Length: 296
Image (cartoon, rainbow, N blue to C red):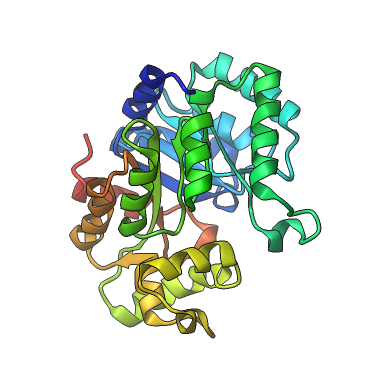
């Protein structure tokens, strides 16, 4: 079981809010150092990097550009990254940057990994955690697990610092907290669009959300929160889009982010969607949200 005192220390270091980014948004490692410094100065506690894979050069640049900011993989696929190699690289970054590198692990999806490979994902996750333990360099308090359903949430609480649900509403956050109990870390992701025009906001959100319509790990889980199969047909219904992404002016968006905290999240990672797409880092939007969230 994770050391609760160390988990509590991780919660404190993460702070209430962080930013989630896709790896493709970072095209220049020198620029990454500058951006990390500004994100830290705005009061966010962490930068999460999606599509994470070895050798974590981007993560190292973000760590090098900041002082206290945590950098989290969101997620390292357990199917694509050998545990021994991940453990060795984790040890290097942990030794250099004082525990500011956190390993987010996950199963990915059968559609991404391959139907024949993606068998018994729960058992494979247990085995992967065993392999990390055998390496002896990745403490339970230094890793998180992507989890939606009770069984995987329970594993996250038992074998890692906690859980990192993705694409779920605040109602799921409340459910996850009930399953985890009070101790484990719960870090919930939320997509946002800072746009007040409904048509434009939904167009931006729909473009990004479309990739998830074919991933039953998400769509099946969302049936528990007011959606029906018809919501996932075609480009997806407005109800699906509004659940997947909070949109409006800063304070309306901040209210959805606060709702995750009220539902039990220790940390909320904010994924900003813009008309500029994944080719650009949303620094202007991060600045606006930092003010609305009254970050320190």
